[in-house]
Length: 250
Image (tube, rainbow, N blue to C red; front, side, top):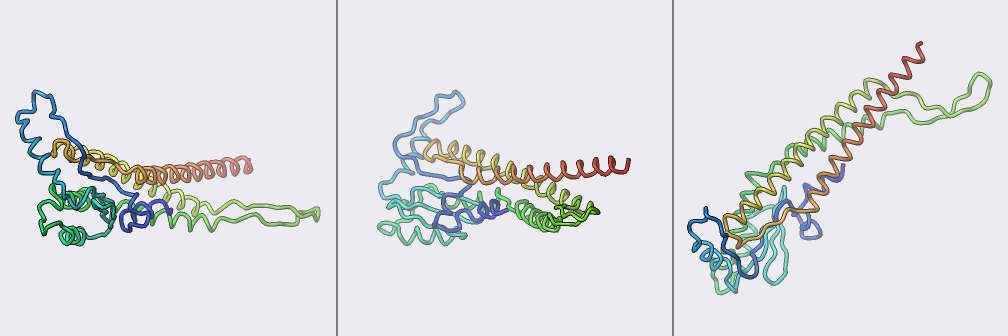
């Protein structure tokens, strides 16, 4: 259950959390090549965009976007994270060289990352999955454990009663709900991050390179797999108990 929480906390702090992001946008170093495509009608625009994005006194190099925050990396290697894009933009303006804001963030990567976070990213499903998982584990904590009983012969033995069927079904339902919401959310996250990065590279003609956050994807899919295992285990347990009860009744 901690995995989604760590995922949501990505880019809210520069102390390790800046490596947990959905997509990063970075000014490309070196020259870019003009696409040799018949559909590419105006090749001169690519050179113009590249020239704008490559001033020698650019203040920032990279911007990372997560569910609840943004992180930027300055040209001097310093990293800053905040949930407010306006605060990061103000910091960049204050650090601009010669008082010029045109070269601080030439292609407005902070603004692009802000729009990605606010209009494309949606964390509501993850919060629902976290709450459902928490209640599911509360239900699982009520399952009886092993304890000693004295049988008819007077000897002690360890027994473990079957858990309550309604509680087991409720735990299965909550686990299934959490699994479905987590799966939809992470799949949505993966597709949107990849699509946004690809479009950013295309619309800047290669002047910006994008990367999908590996750590965020691993955390997201790991949470989905763990929830799937919980649901499968509960389903097998319920079916096994039902089968044992039928055999006992017979």
